[in-house]
Length: 84
Image (cartoon, rainbow, N blue to C red; front, side):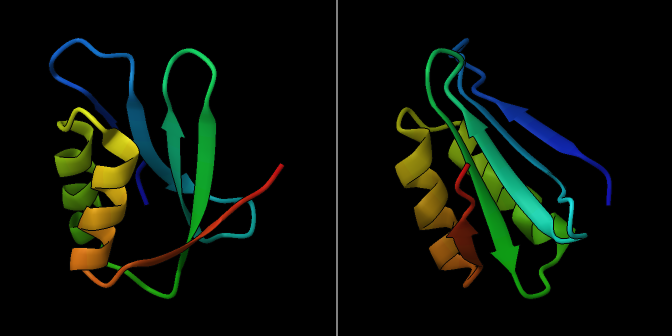
């Protein structure tokens, strides 16, 4: 899996990315560029293209995190928050 990164094209600091996690699974990373960083672990198998499309669409929205949840829900992609 290649790492993929998406930024808001309107010049916002919001960042969404996907990466290979320490345990080998896929993780989604969100950073607002100021104070908030969130990580989710993708549950089950998912197409890299399908996940990339969800992240790309969410990154283009004003409210990135709610848009991300909506895009994941549309594609039946299940995630769990990674704490710590």
